[in-house]
Amino acid sequence: MTIDDAKIIELPKFLDARGNLSFAENFKQIPFEIKRTYWIYDVPGGEKRGGHAYCENKEFIIALSGAFDVVVDDGKEKKTFTLNRSYYGLYVPKGLWREMDNFSTNSFALEFASTYYNEADYIYDYDQFKKLKRDAAI
Ligand code: TYD
Image 1 (tube, rainbow, N blue to C red):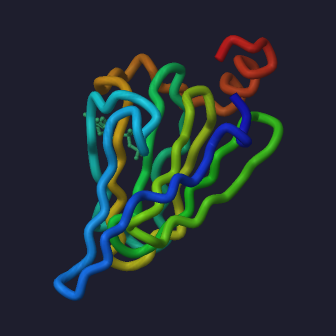
Image 2: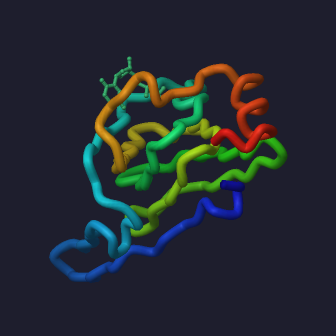
């Protein structure tokens, strides 16, 4: 996987004077089966989240409110995606380092994941990540 495999996917939106609606479905807008969802909120100014890679887990990230950046890194190159619309999702394949920062006040990140929570799936050491990428082990 390289940073070119991470991509923004525009979600359907129904604009309505009563309030707008968007949605996402398994294997349609979201290119995997959702096993888990979690959300990040009340992030203090200047904080970062993430800062790791997953061996197997794929993710789909939506800024339901506010804005933040997701930096993806394949060990050679980095790319920053700014999420600031609730009808855009970022697909992050497995095997990429990713970090989230620049959270605006009251931002709310919703994340869909392709695996159940598994601590053993995480790579927290950047040098180890780079070595695994060099060896094509992830
Ligand atoms: P972590 O994934 O390290 O957060 P981030 O990558 O945003 O910095 O998760 C933080 C803690 O939350 C970790 O100790 C385990 C727990 N956690 C779960 O129990 N289930 C989950 O689905 C997630 C994402 C985290």
